[in-house]
Length: 156
Image 1 (cartoon, helix red, strand yellow):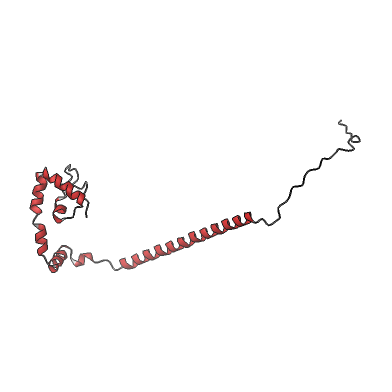
Image 2 (spheres, helix red, strand yellow; image 1 turned 30 degrees about the vertical axis):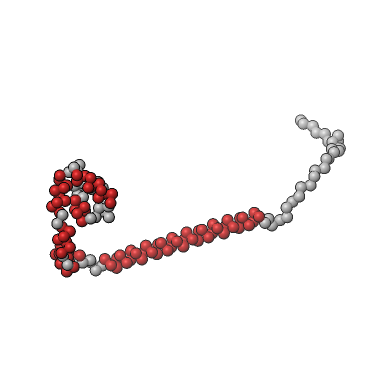
């Protein structure tokens, strides 16, 4: 469904002025449809616009596929929609370049993540299993000073 909330010509304070065709063709959402129904109860301009368009769905239903295609061809001649011949190769080159860059970036990010993961694992393993045995602390023994009387110094 189409939401036409706030859609209208520039500078027009009538917010529902362009909802009439969508209402007639059944393209409004359920919420917008109820809002437009409530609005039409007090707006003669919108009621008149809906009345003018009310026969359109019946006329469109009478057209067969070939007539619709003919109308479309008249509005959009086939020569006007042809693309320049260099457009396809340039678009393919742009897509190819985008894919190459995307793949390269994926590989770089994956490699960086693998390196970081390896470093984290090694640091974690190294921290858990030290290579040298733990050092035990020996109790300190008290020591006595001896022979300090023979040491003398003079400061000149």
